[in-house]
Length: 406
Image 1: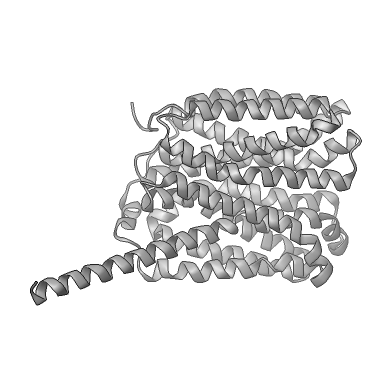
Image 2 (image 1 turned 30 degrees about the horizontal axis):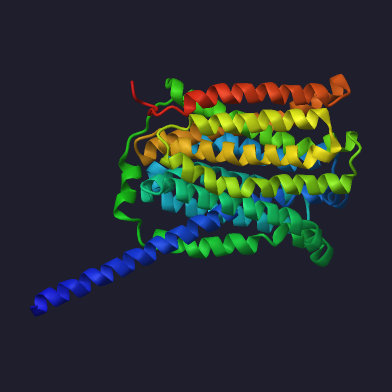
């Protein structure tokens, strides 16, 4: 073997090692972004009472700390694809992490304005990441979309559940502001691991998203089916999370046990956010998964409506499994029903904008129905009916088609 051939082999070996290192760093970066997509929000829920008393604000104002980010998701999601085309996906994700970190740090300081400004910044940063991560995965892991969607979904839901559990112990040890601000440690770590993605200038194929033209999905019936599918699963999840303790309380379950039931639901979500995308990615269509998910929603909600205390944990787990499966399917549809990363970003922006608008409206509407009927029966029937519509739109979204195909 000549010296030139040996030199060429060594160069190829170095290139492979460098490429492998970049891929590993990218995967870690995606996992860390996922870890920051729900935790800064779910960590607030257990502290609402303390926040209300500490900051001297009303119940409505305290409750808006969970709805303001959802509104930010709805308003900003359509602009994320345009920002990615203009500045590149890697750069926009990096600055979104900075927004999230700045928002968490602001919440550490005293004052109502800092509290709400920080919450808005967190919502804006998460909104961009929500939309662009599916596009990023399609762009860099086109052969492993299901696995990578599952990986970041598990990271997102696992850290969301952990942050909910840590909030009160952290508040006891470090005070309310310490509990609100500690999550900045994890967002800073995410920033550090994402720096290589912008320093390298992106992989060669990452320039595609910048050069691709904007697409108009608003006339695509398939895009609207996916949008309603995303919207209904968001509405059911956030409404259920917001009101489950109250529903269980009326059925004679203690507030402490009701809180554990909510944790049970969140942990039931986790394995299915990993398994479902992998299965969905290997199927010709996702009609079977949509059907099973809808059945779990309907049976779980109907079981909670009946109110058999002994079986309540089972029905709550069924709703949790359905929620995890529905979210994962929605994320997968952004990749499976599009032909390139830009289409995926546009579809993600459209569906998440509408989806989180419904999610923001859902808990309030659910509460109004309860006030009108003085019972949780009517609101729960509305969610059950919503599950049937979820199934109808899911059947359309689950067919093996592309959004811009005629």
